[in-house]
Each structure stands twice: as C-alpha cells, then as structure tokens.
Image 1: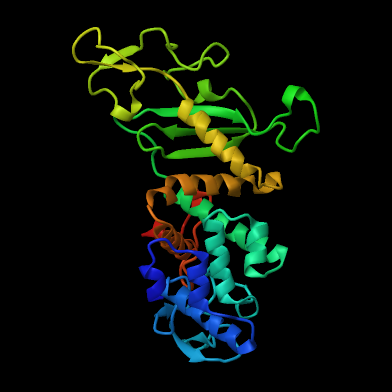
Image 2: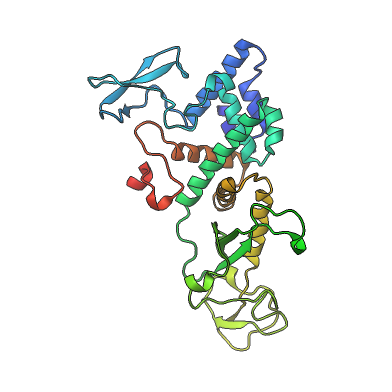
Length: 347
C-alpha cells in the first residue's frame, strides 16, 4: 500500500509488483489477500472493525469469522433474529466471485479503464475472459455516470458564458450506407467557457433550444461560425461583464472607447467537446448503453481532469466508487439525481 501511495504516476507495472506473482495457488491467494487489503484501505470494502447497523432490525452488527465466505468473515446483527450479511453487500464487488476472479484483477481492471486502455487489451493484460473484462468496464462507467450527475451542480454563473448546442450523434455521409441505431437520436448539452464543465443528454428531437431558452445569443452555422463573423467588429461589452475566458481572444487592436471589451457569440467549445464525446462513443456497441458512455465523458472531463497525476485520478476514482456503493446500511447513488435518496443526499 505504501509503495502505491508514494508513486507519483502509478503504472500497471507498479500495481503488478505490489500484488506479486499469481501463477501458483499459494501466490494467487497472497495476491488476492493484498487486493482485499487495498480495497479495505480505499474504503471500497469494510474492515472487521467498522461498526454497521442491521438494515432489517436496526440493531448493531458484529463481525464473526466464517472461512467459507468471500472475505473469511461476515456480519451478524445483535438483534433477536441474528440476521447475517456479507460485508460485500451494497459495495462495488457485491455479488462478484472475488476469490475466483481475484480481487487484484478487479483493481487492475479499474485502473485499466481509468487510463483508457481498450477493453480487449485489458482482457489480455489481466488474463480474464472477454465478458468479465467488459462487465467490469461497464461497472466503472456506471460509477462514473452516477458521480458525474451527482456532483454536476450548476454550470455557469456571473460573468460566465455557457455554450448550448445540439448535435446528431451519428449520421450517414450523403445519406449513403447502412442505417445506424443512432440515426434519429440527438445530443443536447452545454459547456462553460470559464470552467469547461459540461453536460450532455440524449433527446428525441432537434430544434428545442428556442422553447427552453429565451434571450440567448445564436449563431447560424450555415453562414458562419462566429457572430459577428471574423472580419467584422466584435460585440463591445462593458469591462467586467464577462470573465476573461469568455471574451474574444482573437481581436487585435485598441477598443473603440474606454471600458469596453470584445465578445463574440460562438459554440466552438461545444463543437470541440462533441468531437471528444463521439470518439468515446465509437466504443459503444448499443444504444441502450449510450448513457453510460456519456456519463464517462462527463466524469473524465468534469472531475478526473481536475487531478494532475494518474495516481491522483486513481485515488479519486476509488473514493467515488466507495461513495457510489457505500456498503451496508446506506443507500447507493442513483443516476436520476432528482430522485436520488443516497446517504449523501439525505444528509
């Protein structure tokens, strides 16, 4: 654990060195023990010392040794019925056959997803089946989506500009070729010029902006990408109206009068973010899982990018895993944040 924490840029090689070989049965058990120890340190799994309350009778729970269970112990409530529960209940590894797949493999799959390794490469690296690798990548996307929406908050504010745009997810060039499942689906979203926080949701129809927003600036992309277009004077706004990140940085020359700054209407940041999202969606193999890939894109851009090193990103993601699946006695997070009654929303 100390060697991993000390690493400024955590690598697969360092993770592998921490877990050691797992070729023999004894080595596998040791690597699995180290993986469980790391999951406990990361608070993804509880320790025996943690106090829990029975969700059925609200009595306190005690840890009892049971070598037949996943972690070698389980909880027993101190109430009259003596309910028993696995310590993995309501955690990220709930229902997983940890002792068969190996806890160390789960952690390496988490790391592989975090660094954007293709799932086929992760499958070979971790030595698991294709279904197992794809399943754990999906679990990671589920965490990312829940946290992305839960922590989103308001985008924009005083002095900020939020670029709002719609884009067709995928379309056939010149209407030629095989129809895709995204043929009639659009993405509606926005991005802050100041903070670069973004969001995106799938919508069934195009052209809804005028029904949602009133008094916003617009740009017609059939004629130009800036309003006013380059070559014409910008919009001159009073100094301090917008944050520096929101102003026209391409204007050269003095302002026409004192205390004004140049500004242009555009959605260049939104268009750039759509390209980034569509590169992620190329990995998507079904319309029903598109929401998870959009959530992954939001999570990586809004949250992970705030962390400078891969080590910081890794521990941030592990912390978010524990938040999304908090264990016995606490409600897990929901993607539908308006109806979420998780432990953080209730506080």
